[in-house]
Length: 140
Image (cartoon, rainbow, N blue to C red; front, side, top):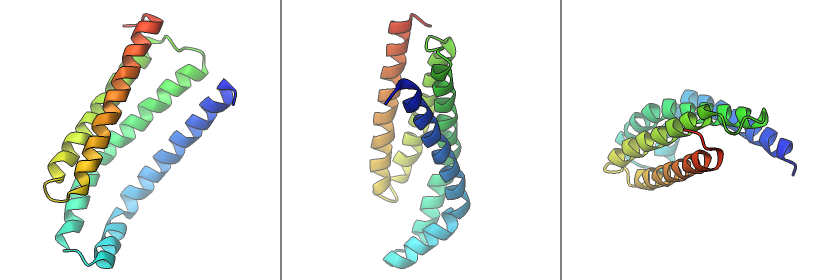
């Protein structure tokens, strides 16, 4: 795929994920209730999942928003923008916050430990990419 096509595809996926995030935030109570009833779990699990997911949603949205800004800068040919470095830092911090929230929730529902580990790994990748941008494009 050409550079322009991959950037447009990435922007499209980012927009789709933003839409899905809003839909998930709206439908989360219904989905969680359905899951708890289907699996025969305690009703307190629904509360645990919602109390964990709703605080994570704004940080997920911010991460997608900043990713979109980085992709837009790249699309404009402005790879060496100092804003990209700032946006990548914000994305990494958002991922760490999500990891922290889900790590605490893992005490109540073990699968959240996997989510926490995943977001810690993603934050590591984001900070590595940030350092690559700094070193290749000499931005600070």
